[in-house]
Length: 302
Image (cartoon, rainbow, N blue to C red; front, side, top):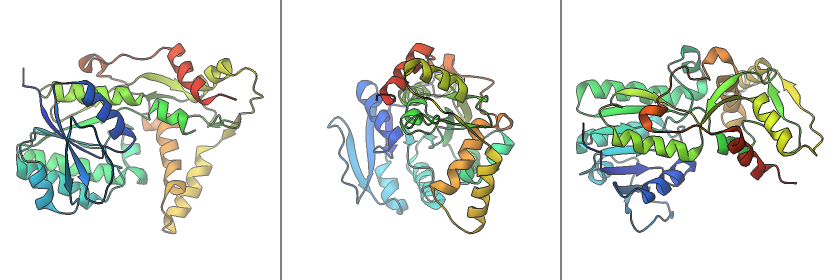
């Protein structure tokens, strides 16, 4: 069995995924964690971690910070410029890092339709770059596919809009998709680092649940039966058509890119439900309907 990737550099530790990774690493004493913090950042981290201020655009700065690291885990925003992300990879190679886990944590990009969606272009570019570098250097990679985040997606009204009791059901809401709690995403990353040989140069797929919007809606109605629920069916083609027009005009941002994410999650042609899972390999449990209702209950308070 290959040795644990013990010395880990974490990039993007202040983001949604980064914060749960910080907690997971803090509770797992097997790892020595170094947080790479952008020089302009004022974010603070637990004293158990080493914090190194770096220039994201400087290969020398990043290489020096990665000296002695076994793995790099990136939790940065995927829309970070591709050239900046490539510098992380180049620095990892220069520093002799063994494994790079990029900021994937989402839809399965082995699906050709999903790969073609504009919102995933930066991820596809980084995947391609990592695969090329893995062929010409000792650096290895793991792509972690979780589907959309279950708790985050409910909190931010992304998977199911509940704030006004008027959920938008995309194409009727019947498409089943894989979805994962944030703390389970963090547990998956630690498992990848714990099993470097089994997860080397491949994708791993995991989920907390496979459920549809209608499945979530049914549970929401059980949690809040007193509400006057008024669901609205929205056609994905309609919102993507608007996104295409905005993109053609050079208008970027959430209003343009979110419809493509909606399509990737709610259109069965885009492979939103994982057909094979690595939950057992990674030691990850799925959640029950009762546990999903507990999550919903947090965001359905009157």
